[in-house]
Image (tube, rainbow, N blue to C red):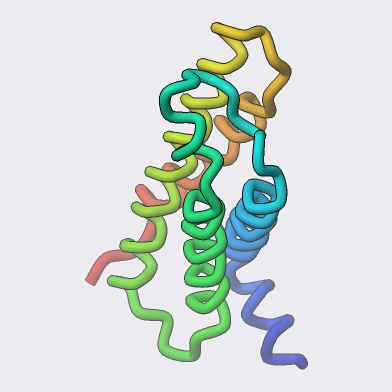
Length: 126
């Protein structure tokens, strides 16, 4: 138990991002009609696979936090995937807000995306 707490204290941003993406993925999986626009691709956007990507990236991020070796390559890959998927979600939610006027949490997701990008730019490389 102490090792888990020590790992979370060592990498607090990775822990928060991993938990946030895990929560986002579960939310997207459990809400089948979250995205409404454009009607042509709402079936694809509301598919459970989209939420599954968030869950997978969140689990990979948390795996990296608790891994004893903490591969730099895995960290880079997960941060790149995380920033990409969060940027796409933020832009898609922003477009919902612009086109339909639906309240979406695009501002908080944009802030999380910015944190991920800052974290990725400051990550160590071999």
